[in-house]
Structures are given as structure tokens and as C-alpha cells.
Amino acid sequence: MVLPSRMQGRNFGPAQLNEIRTLLREHPEWSRYQLSRQLALRWNWRSPSGQLKDMAARTLLLKLAQRSWIELPPLIRASPTRSGRAPAPALRADWDSSPLQGTLAELGPLHIEEVSGRTRSASRAQLEDCLHRHHYLGYQARVGENLQYWVRGGDSRPLACVVFGAPAWQCAPRDRWITWSCEQRSLALASIVNNTRFLILPWVQVPQLASHILGAIARRIAADWTAKYHHPIHLLETFVERGRFRATAYRAANWTCVGSTQGRGRQGPRAGILSTSIKDIYLYGLHPSWRQRLCTPSATSNGEPSAKTGADSRGVPAVD
Image (cartoon, rainbow, N blue to C red; front, side, top):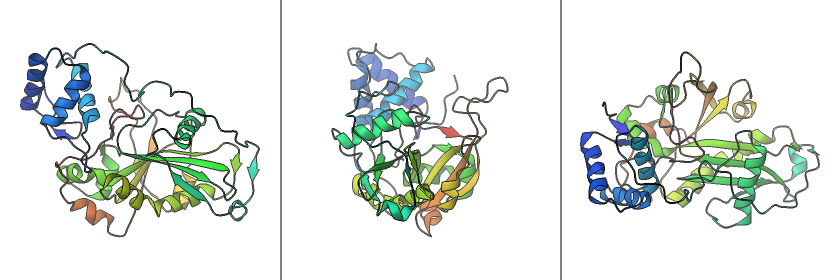
């Protein structure tokens, strides 16, 4: 058995594995929920805002179990995050889905609302349902740090949904572009966020709307993120599926293409066949000194980056 040096964004080795095995042996009555919470508490595994990262601990335990390095207690109930399952029926809005064409000026001032903190709100439920129904990747409930934006026109008519979450743990073209070391990446990864979903509603056809939305959100997202999670962000990233999209909106909004993935996915190649589609990687710095700030990060409360875990069926991918 060859252990990785890092798992789930943390240093990992025989000592950590033995500690987990000891917990399992000494507390056979504990559920998976109890195990993940106790492990996060023992390791003081917290986000920069101080929130206990028990879901990150749960994902770590699942990865170890998948590799047969530990045996977890039986699953008692389905995950409360609904990861991997279809979302619950949302409150359906009586939207006008007639074709909307025209110019940006005719839309009036855009109204952009961040709704991720409103757990039981109709706005958040409708956004998630809209993405599930109309985005080609679908959508599952988010886990980990994220922002969800509704974009409406001057007449309050819904136009678009935009979601940002945690970044890829490793991405070779991105990491070369930033020019940071593995240690610097470990410390500063929480300062990057990934645009995981961007949907212009199918009946909306307004030239330059997508790039206009990207620009408007780029001007406010750093403040929104800091207000919610109490730590700064410096860089935006996204992965655009080549062959399906041309990334016209990102290029028009001054995002930079820094390379592409190799199609190997999280599990690596299988008999020379691509495991996933090729994606172009786009980055956008939120201020002129973004690279300097990423390469000289301030220490977080526990020296660990904040990572997305169990969200959007992607986890925290390593993208080559």
C-alpha cells in the first residue's frame, strides 16, 4: 500500500491513517456522521471563517474506504446534502418564457442578487431548479463555499444564473501560469474560486449579455465572498468544454485562456481512451497584484485551503 502525501487538501500519511483506524476501532458504535465530525474536531479542520469542515472529513473517509484502507460503518441514511441525487422539487415560478430579444440598453439596469445564504428561500430553490432543468450538466445542491447569483432585467424578469465554488485542487496549466509552488498553492488555494455554472435562460437572446454579466459579477464578487466567508479571493477560474462552447463571453470579458485539460479526469486514462472531455482553462485576476497575493499568502487559521467537497459530483478535482 502506497499512501499519497496529501489527501483532500491536507498532508496525509501513515500517522493520519492510523489515527483514523484507531477511531474506528475504539468507537464501533459511531455513525459516519459522528466519525467525520470527531475527525474534523481532532484535526481542528476548519474553513478560514472557522466553520468545522466535517463534510471534507466525510469525503476523506469515503475515499479511504473506496481504496479498502478502512471499513466504514453501514450507511444509516442518505446524505443530507443530496449529492448525487436529483434535487427536491422547487417552488416553480410563473416565468415569462417567451423569446426575449433586443439590446443591453433595452433590458435596463441589471439586478444581480446573491442567494446562496438563503437556505429556505424561494429564490435559491428556483435558481437550483432552473440550473437542474436547463443547464447541460444539471445541478446538485452545493456543499462548501459558494455563491449563487440570480440576474434579472430592469423589469425583474429572470435572465441568467451564475454559480461560483471552490477551485480545482490541481490544474497544471493554471499552476504554471500563476508560477506558485505546491506549498504556496496549499496555503492560497482558498483565494481562487471556480465559475462552475453559467446559464443564460434558453429564451433570452441578447448580444453581449453574457460578457456584461461576467464583468458585473467580477466587480462585486470579492466583496460578496469576503462578507460571507471572511477571507479574500484574488482569482477566478472556469473550465469551458471544447467542442461545445467557444468561450466567446469569457474572452470578451477579458478572461485569459491559459491552456487546456488532457481529458484524463480524476481517475486517469483508461486504455488510452479519454476519461472526460477536453476543457479550455480561463482565468481572471480580480486586481493587478493577484499573482503576488497568491504567491505570498497570509496563513489561514489552520494552514489548510478551503476545498469543495462532495459538491456538484466533481469533488475537488485534480485537473491535468
